Structures are given as C-alpha cells and as structure tokens.
Length: 290
Image (cartoon, rainbow, N blue to C red; front, side, top):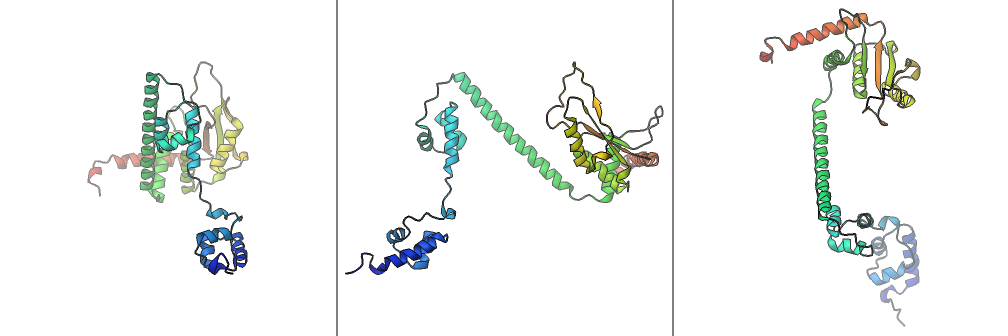
C-alpha cells in the first residue's frame, strides 16, 4: 500500500531531519531546499510543533502605532487627528481604538486652538532642524586649524574675555573667566600652543550659592582634565532676593576662572599681539591684498 505522502514515503525519517534542522535555526525555505521538500503542506507537517527561530519572526511594526493610537484616543483625539498624527489609514485607526469610549465633543474654538498649536509645534520643529543643519554645515566649513589660525583666534578670544591692564589699575597677568566649556577648552589649547605649562594654570569656580556647588566643581575639573587639587576655593555669589535669576537648572555650572601664574611678560605680549592684529586688519591697503 502506497504511503499517503507519495514520494515522501519515509515521512518519519524526513520529520527527524526537518526537526533537527529547525532546532539548528533553519527557516522553512532553508529546510525545503536542504531536504528537497517542495510541497508546503508536507513541509509544515514535518516541522509541526517546532517553533520558528527568532530571526525568522517578522517584527510587528504596527504594534507601536496601535499603542500610540490608543493613547491619543484616550486623550480625546478624533480619528482625523490620530490619522494625521500617525500617518496611518482610517480603517487601521478604527480597528485599533473602536473598543474605547468616544471623546467628548470639543468646543470648536478649543479645536481651533489645538490645531493652531499643532501647526506651530510643527513649524518650530522645522525651524529647529534648519538651525541644526546650518550649524552643522558651518562647522564643516572650518575644517582643521593651523597653528597660526589658533594663535590669532586665541589672542582675539583673550582680548574679548580676559582680564586687561588699565592705567588706573595695573593687572599685567593672564586671567580668563568664562561659562562656556568650549571657550575654556579653546583657551587652554591656545595656552598649550604658547607652551604655557599646565601646572602654571590655576582654576577657580565662581557660582551662585544656591546652585549645586560640588557638581559644578566636578564638571569643570572634567572639562579642563585636572584634579580637584588644582582648584582654588570656590567663590560663591550671594543671593539677592530682589533679583529674578535665569541661570538656574541642572545645566547651570557657574563660571571658571583660569589664571596663569607669573604671566606679566606673557600678558604684555598678548596686548602687543592684539594691537598688531588691529593694525593689520585696518591697514589702508587691506582691500588690495591677495
């Protein structure tokens, strides 16, 4: 009597092979090609009861959309709003949320306000992306800095932000204060270019007394890659109850003061370099230079 599976008469032997392959992580297609089983019904019977390997399982891409649609529906969103927000079909939205209660009908003015806010949020997102792209493109335009470019940038930076000597108050020393970690790193790179030893640089944090002082000290120590022992005593700014402070929050780190010891001669050179830059930039033949 012929076996019901025809040419696959040795079914049990084939099943043992198919199950072994399945447990080794083979897909149905791979088992088919390996055992030359081209009848899908028989192929499925051979591996019946054996779970497919994880790598063959298709991700349920719509699970996240379904969960989000239900969340929005519970917040009172309409089908139209959910459809526009998630970019899916009306039929899918209906299927996902039809068991949820209908939202209360909103006042048309309230709906208009919500729609206007949604449009504005979208516009803000577009503008933010434009800002990001512009900044990224500008950063790429700079490329690598030559030693001379870093030298000139450092002189200009110091003259904008550093301590300067006055006839009525002699301050011939290099001292620099800033709250921007990028500016601080650039200033240190400039000092390195000038071959100023790091052990000549002293650090001190200036911060409001109500801030997280310890966190700020750790933050600036990481920025300048120095041990806390290289830092002087932190200067605390007293709180004025009549002043509304805007520099609050977890990202407020105060300012860092960097002072170079025995730097009177260096300061004089910096001042000379600055006036040299000014003179070169304002020379009468500037427009004719190539």
